[in-house]
Length: 445
Ligand SMILES: *Cc1c(COP(=O)(O)O)cnc(C)c1O
Image (cartoon, rainbow, N blue to C red; front, side, top):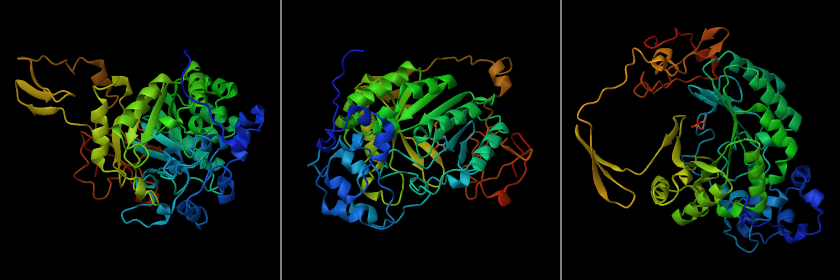
């Protein structure tokens, strides 16, 4: 690998910490900062930060020494600081904010498992993170040291997955799966790999960003036993890309783990086209492909981070065509109420008729494309993929089995949205309201 220009930083108070300690993730975890006294040793707190840090019932604060070292200590608007150190803005009540804005709990057939899309599930495996993002979409469950997922719940999750053959992709999240004890993580991955219909495993983690020293050879040796295993990290600002993160990503890449990045669009942190261009280009240098750019969710305490939706579209427009196609993430709004991720993109299609499509390119140049005069589509009768109906619309998502019966309930107030083509099917944790259903299109009641 050519030498990369990314810095390696340590706040002055950590200068005398021996390297073996600094590079030990357990040391990083047990020396996290969370109080006014801790932070004052590293930076000058604002009155707003002090107020928040001494407030009751605030979402958990904890920052690794590594990550706090990336903050410019004299800048109250430092983009890393804003992500992890609370301000009084968090205490301001905000109308429209929701505790569980994505209705994940409603889509949980068993605790900690969110089955929102037909062929994949989100599995919440821990409530702990290496550091806590102030805009956390799961602040309702994350951070509470007393609320860990139990062994019994884990067995229920595994049992559900075994009985749900349409799940081919399991996304481990939390909390942060890479904060789990190494043996526990290995057991979890091994148990999932035993289920034949689970084709891919994914981990969503900010550990490489908060605590890159966690990516040890021991960890990559474990991960590579369970391929195909993919990982999404979470970088929001170019300042988070350090020599240490580059090294962690290099190790993961060498272990065959393809890396993606999920960013959240945050006011005052990364709501800038030029900054985003630098971010995605730097990510490619460390072999991380930008995956999603998220609109900030409607989370209590995070109102001050929200941007207009148009800002996200503007950013994508400033990337597409202007830089490597590889570098352009998909901008998504996770629909409040559980509608799922909705991709939004600039409009390049100006008009369309039977024979002509009118479009514009990234420079605003308008052009046309002539449609073919005749089109011979493939024959679905002889196509083996069509016949296998692997993703038959209307069928997918229906066949979750609990106690041997398929369960499905039409979501309240979603009659119009529910169509057999799109197949919006949900599962609910509220078992009383579940009803058994015949499998296949046309049988919904
Ligand atoms: C984001 C998400 C997924 C994964 O979605 P992809 O678009 O496949 O990355 C799965 N389940 C839930 C509940 C999610 O929020």
